[in-house]
Length: 345
Picture 1 (cartoon, rainbow, N blue to C red):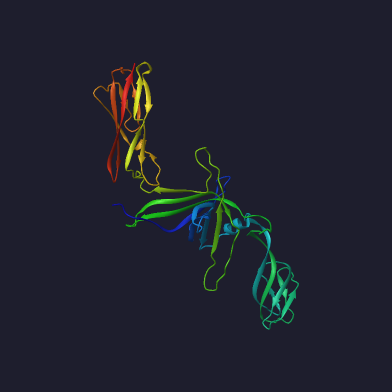
Picture 2: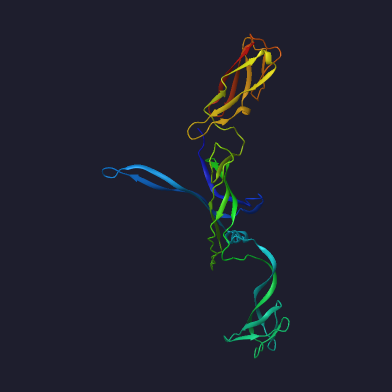
């Protein structure tokens, strides 16, 4: 009996530029990570007592929320829809100073005047000389100085009309069985995640600030005519690289006919693993073994692990044969199917 599997802890988050594919953030200290899919339902009712006739589902939505324990400038920049710039900017500086004869030296050179808060609650505005200030009647008191100075620093400007960023987001989480072994890595990949722009920077006296990144998946067009547009792709990557579990196999086509006149020639066998339920059939051709058998099969050969059958130069119209296809499943053992071979003039 297979062990139960569990999606454990939180996911790491990788954010990329959706146009270049370059990574812009790798979140490995998340507190929570959530992947939420929702739809709106419209009920169709009619007849006596208004019974429910049909439910029409629409407005499918996929939301992502990541909460981080560490402070990251990129999260604010994505919500603001801008970048983190580094340049010389004006910042507020505060110094605790002990005056000597009313004077003291600031830690930085101020831009403009300096405001000084004295112990008695009075406030003075002082014109500095370089980085030196002189406070009238300051004596040897301890004071607080507040002023503007120029520093080289990172800065995010939250503009009034700029929309939040769109990123490529991948969540990576562990799937463990009930023995504690990691069996799969789950990846949720959203090619276009529209950040909501909702951002709260909370400060707590008895804790550290946490920040969240929230977003809604945007439609991505399909690259073929068989599949539709999508929001995300969820992938289970097996840790051991073990073969997927299947209940039976189907080798197609059921028979192969070769023309003697066209020999030598090759034809391919495709093997599907039947998984059942909501699982689509899987192409397991390269995981199978192939053996030619039959009373008169000298004209046929097959690649042991490729499924490529060759009707060789010795082929005659009397040649018939069979390819035995075998796949080993850890639960169901050896699964077998056959392909019939024949030759025509």
